[in-house]
Image (tube, rainbow, N blue to C red; front, side, top):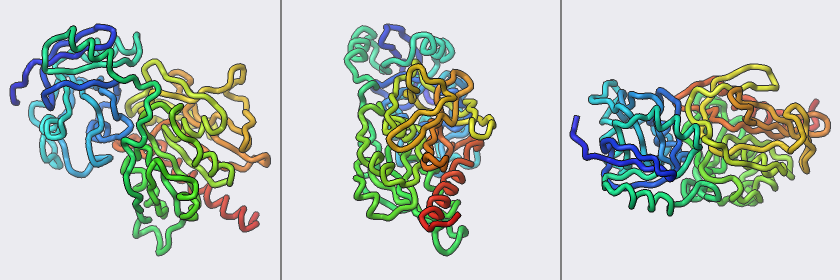
Length: 387
């Protein structure tokens, strides 16, 4: 294993850790967050939702399976920095093409290893997610000043930075039928590659549009449904015009993660920043519509706020229909899903705060893509006047 230079990690409250450089040399800044997943680090690193975040891995051994050319969830690594305790000396997997360290260096991602990630995680749990700097330069006081001068996540508008520049189409899978069962427009707020792939498996043709797409851009494609993806940043900064217009027209809607937060705001609900967020692939959530508990993949630092004085079991009237909480996190009762129904009780839109596409797992929540297809089918039947 190559010898790395010493490195320094400094949090905005002054807590300092020293270790070894891992990945590229240099200096980086971001929001320090921790991920509890024991596997799937390649998918985590390439998830656009992690833009401007420095990810601390709670699992002590990272990099065992190296880096392959098949599992990326986007075209690049998006994390601002990476923190691990014990990186693998030699990767061991038949699919590996290079080491994790090699890939971090190739993409210019600054990281640190050899620190007590358990102590760092406990600190973030107690004090909350905060700004951080990692550097191979060794002036802690100067780095702390730069950390405190860096941008915060609250108020950050980041969707445009991670979205596609040009629209593209992911066709329905070849074995799903000669004609696509449905056409969906997906607004790319930081979409992962597995999302249109899972829609394709269900016979859906997905038109992925930039985050800046207008309602006219959406309607021009005559879609059966609208999908809003995951993504980074503060949902309070987002323009809701396109989503609100789609809801006004009764277009079936499915949103995940950032798309859940935007759905909540479009319904007139608020959002707020969590103390340290949910990140990892082992978060327990209950689907209140079925009573089933599922283990889910998360990456969010913001959540939807239910109105004061209204219980999570109580419905809320909105401009578009009746909204209810459909999913709740079993760790802390954070709202993890919403549904919108007409006055006759028919489902017209829904969202979840987590990642049902869940590369690299778990797969408990994949049924939500089926629920979206059922919603579009019911909407199509209603338009035809069918029972």
